[in-house]
Image 1 (tube, rainbow, N blue to C red):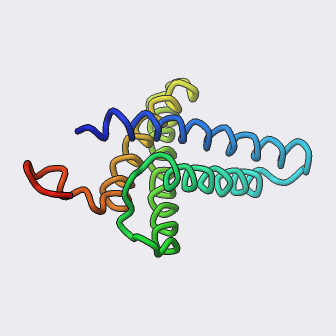
Image 2: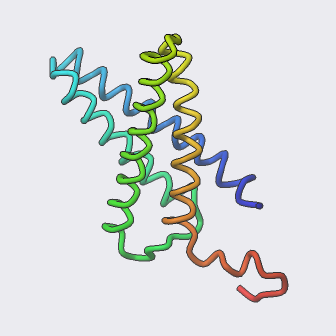
Length: 141
């Protein structure tokens, strides 16, 4: 449980930075480059995922399940992010279309759910290697 005190806050900060990059690229593509919304959103998402991935492997997590093979790790990282994006869309659809709630309020709830989903899956599937000794008292590293 020590990871909650170190990895969780760092993951939160990394996620905020990734969101800022995502939003900045989206806005720049829309306003400066005059790209369509789908292309701008895609460019923002890809940029945000890259920032989140680099921060995750360099600063947030101490272990990597894939070791020195980054391509499958990166693809898995993105896949989890895409599922998280789907969760966000589903929560927004239910909250706004079905329940008639304010989109911004629903977005905050969706962001919290997606953040937790992404952190739990990424940590468990991608960044959990070499931690097995942490749970065994008296085990040597």
